[in-house]
Image 1: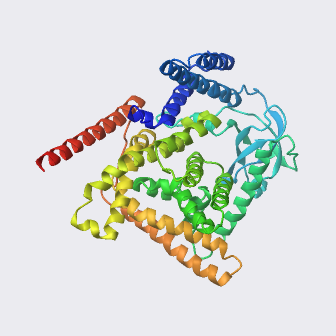
Image 2: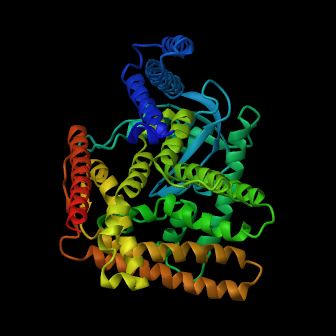
Image 3: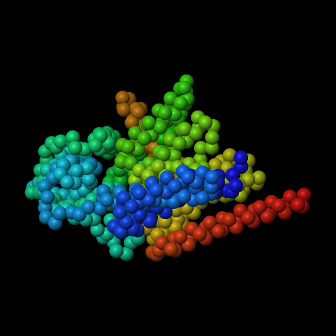
Length: 516
């Protein structure tokens, strides 16, 4: 049975769009419509859909409405967990350090996971004053317990002229408050973790393992602090060592995506794991080992939205590979979106989530048309040219997906993004490979030293190449001001241009066929 339209080929796309619509509606009506109203309405319509089996179109519409209501219910419930009324006086609580403490002058910043009291299992972003007499804050590490007496404040947006909503970002990542700690406001002591969930305790263990690996990276000899920071960001998602100047260089050139764990990084790791487990006699066991390892890695680096998206898609790829089905499609990306938004609907407002999905959608939609533009030309027989053109096509396709969002959030467009990706993507791939080789060669210090030398050269070439691109005239267009309607309009223009291009290509093929 053939589908009755293009949209019928992507049923999960409709589900994802309805879920997004429900989440947006639930967020807009939060406080006016209660969680129980959304839930009861969804249940009522779901029961109604069972009676409409003889009217399939009406039943489908009702089911779509159920998904909208379910999305509104989920986001209302999630907002109820993170939007709390904080006490207006200092409170006493125990917490455990849940992220790597980073020093900024006389202040050490870290995330705290509350282990008792009314805010148990909630996250707080803490700024700890560290003076010359008291250096305790600089000795804190992940998993250390603290007893604190401090005033809790709601997160605030510091840059009023920016489209980046810091307060929303804090809610998306589960933070309910911020606090400033004086040396007299806290003391280190062991705290009980019994009130934390098993997931929280497992996350703390994974973070400790990550800290151990980070210490190995930061102990590498011959590397500058900037080069070690780049390796730590690319492999373990730790950006604490990146300087403002280095971040600006990567931003101007359009290479910031290589510093954020995403599909590029997990794709490299997925390829390595697939090679390692490809010779297993039972293919299913090998794929299961790959999926478990991928999710263990994502858990260790803190579950960033872009990495979760990639892990979800690679998990589905592993499943469908055993069924000999198409691995990558709009259904695959839609499934990943549905799973993530059902688990945490606030992901919808995560910048990494938005850019990750739009980049993949851009590649799925625009890559093939761009790649086929030069097929059949004389240079097409040169393998190196085909690979270079494939990388260029991916870069342009992904840029079409994320450029409006980059302009909206960061007010910038990188003009040499194609040149940047030609430099950054191959070197990033090699850097990740050699970092894992470096870890694997720990029992063999001589070989590990050689691998470290190669890694040093690769990172140096990457930073040097991007600095050269950033120094070119017109490297980026800055000061772009975009509103949400303008972003939507740009995407509409891109979609209309794509449709016109497809239509023109069909007319050209038809005319060529008629001439023959």
